[in-house]
Length: 298
Image 1: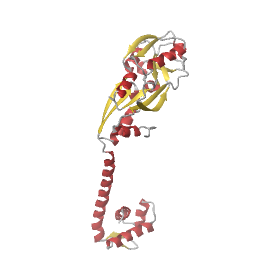
Image 2: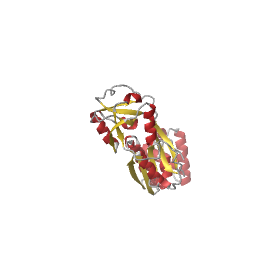
Image 3: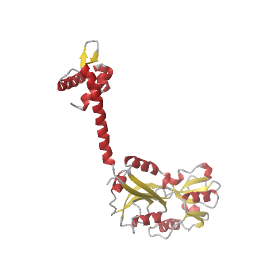
Image 4: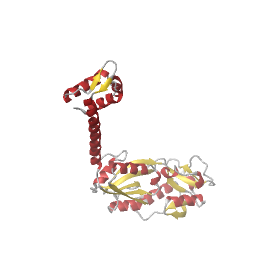
């Protein structure tokens, strides 16, 4: 007895017509008839009375109809339990992400993983670049989504590049450069900067950022320093200066914030986001999570 035979049998029971049952499975009426005949021979009873005008269930057929439904239902439940057993992985996964990255599709990725592995407890840390690298190397986080600068002191970390984002200058709508379609970094000379707080770091963040300004022929005049993206945008909207932010943040800006994001020419791929993890991390949930990220296969 085969599952497919039971499905054909129940289809004929529903339609009381072999041709309609065959159409349901996109096969020929002859194929359905042969499978029902094989099933009847195996059971040793007739399941249908057939005439040129009608098809009807025999008493044995009516009895077997309920059993066939139960068999298919139990088979479906068994298959689902087997699939769930493959995903019953318990544990905890500690995830860190750089401030502002929550504005990407990160929530979709996390939601999909939680649906697939509901028994894995997730915790989240939203921090700046250096703090995330420190926490990862100290084994306080399992995986981070972070901006890549120098990798010289990160030999204990494995990573994959996820995406590169253009850098944009976010300005108040009243700024003289705000309505340009693009600007050169050197044109920002003389305008005050709203910066994100950066602690002393060995990961190259400050060096890289200042190096780009040096290449443009000036160092910025920092007017205001904030701890997070939202405060920086608020300061820009208040007219304190401009901020340099990647497009995954600027794409979500709305007009009521009274700011405009202008692309910086030649810096279309300056901001690189990676997924990073400690090379000695043996957390079984980590590998499942990494394999759920598009573009990563371990």
